[in-house]
View 1 (cartoon, rainbow, N blue to C red):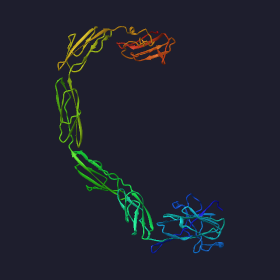
View 2: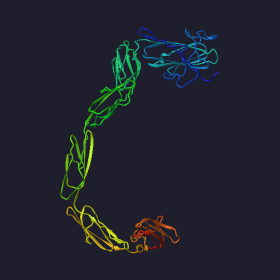
View 3: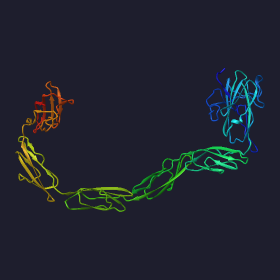
View 4: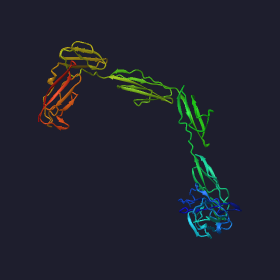
Length: 536
């Protein structure tokens, strides 16, 4: 024998109309949902019993003298189990009902439930009666039985009836589907004294458009309330969107894409998702998706000429002058870098001036540089050294110079000197501006003399750091070592300072070795060594 409890519930549902009444007859037979395993919620209306089997109903003649509810058959579960669970569901649309006392007989023991509530138990082979009406409700109901038998003949019998006492029975129809944004109606099948829909409507029909559950409470002429419920499902439709109206240039073409749908009807007669357009007009489409839902959209195509603009070449003017920069194109808007929206501007200051011309076809931009010469800026640079007997080229940094006059009498843009001395140049531009500068060229000294021999990093603000003043014309490397040959500082920059520290900590007073490798003005590598002292 199997352990545990098993519940056997057999419901035979018969719906007949007698005038305005309907009757449910529940009898033990082969129509009950049946299982040999107890599951959570098994005796509730909305339990999912799809995986359950159905009962077996052998005979109205019991084995071994087992009593049977008059006019019924017995039922159980095959293969046989000691405990069996039965359930039957039905829907009430009104509580204007009368229900007979349920008659039940079981070989050993049973437990009778209505909507999960225990309404009766019994033992041994006798016919018992129980009230089921008290726990019935509008909507889905469940009658459930757990039957226990510890040995053959494994059988139970049951009978009950439920009658409506008024009518007619309400029916608002089956569940429906509606296209997104559309409206449909639920309608009560009979005329009643009054109606109250879940949406607030009080007529026989109620318009609905949003997905959800809807119900109608109707009151008949006897004052009985009837309730029916239906579900509305919404087909999610992607509404067609052709995008904003668009402008194209003469000679161009554009594709208008309606997206992915089942069918298309264009104003052009096309039936594809994509059409090609190269002329002005309004273009509309009606699309239909796989559920038959439709939507529409239209788009205007405007054709314009492409704008062009040319401000001319960059120009240079003298201080006090002015220039007019113009741009023009039909049916266009103008936006200058100055903020002006006119077709031309008057320029009196140095700068870059741009204009953007735009129309429905797009936009185009051009720029023009205007330079006003207010003065002449000329530099010969810092004083410098001759590299032994080599030649030295002196060339000023200047823009817009028209003439040169050197202290040597030369009139070219540069001079070449071979002797130390002071050299000067006077320049002038086309606007009459003049400039003057001079430079001293010195004889090169021994670079090794440009290395200090001590410094005092004692935080008094004087000689806190040390560096060489060697001018290297190529690679440079400075290395500082202690007396043991340990590297303390390395640099490839002739202008970098040493602060007399190692890893952030001050080094003690004393002498430190340095090694400098540099490139002289003749592009030769020189190496020099020496001692630098830290004093405090």
